[in-house]
Length: 322
Image 1 (tube, rainbow, N blue to C red):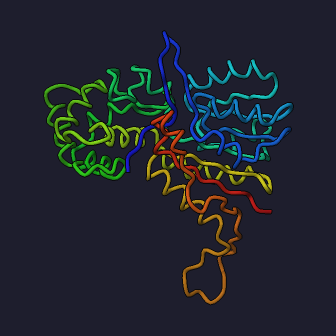
Image 2 (image 1 turned 90 degrees about the vertical axis):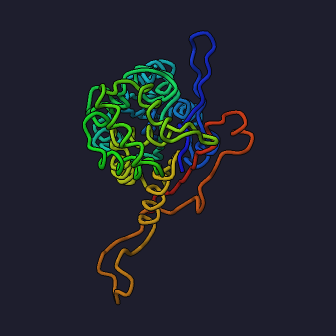
């Protein structure tokens, strides 16, 4: 299942507005309280962080982490509204334990992951995330690290591209799209998001509900940012940082993310990981989490009507056991 990114953007003059998804549910499942210490591992547009700061007033503190330097600039602006209570932190949540402990967040009451793209990233043509805007084919959350999507698109063989688009994009026409990309780049390098979207659209054809390039762009973005690997590491780090009774909340926007989160929470809530049929436990595993959401929480019809991009959101939550 392919879904839209988080948040909602609207232009009023030159102002971009960001609307956080599942905001009320997030605050409730985090059990935000005055004086608590929290980590927003994906600051983005800052909507969830602001709500956590308000709910934890007067002395709650939030560590705002993001790989995107532009998001951290927004966090620094917000920090001026909450002196001493918001600490911006530029970094990838794959290194969450290291980032948090270096800033005095060795034990926290809650960690939030709001996965996917922010409205600000989508609205910036120079970032290359949107197939509806023309800009350099980049797609990196942190433009100072790693390789842009253009490197993959212009150098990977068709077989590797097809595997990527099929596995990370769940695209049924992955092979045809990969062959079209290779054929197009023989004539000239594919340098912009608009070029790639046109190539994919010609092969994938019209689709009801989503743009034909959605799945391919998702696959490239996940690969460029190593999102699934970072998520696995970030979730494990979050559990290490949570004090007993602390809450973990994750909002995902496509099935690959949601399945990863579901598997992680299920594994961490099991008292034993020994193979079935093992007469006695030899793994020494202890359950570290109690799942609070047997089924993912989804946006209400009212929220979807007000913010169509929220329709694909899934919230899962768990509590750290003693």
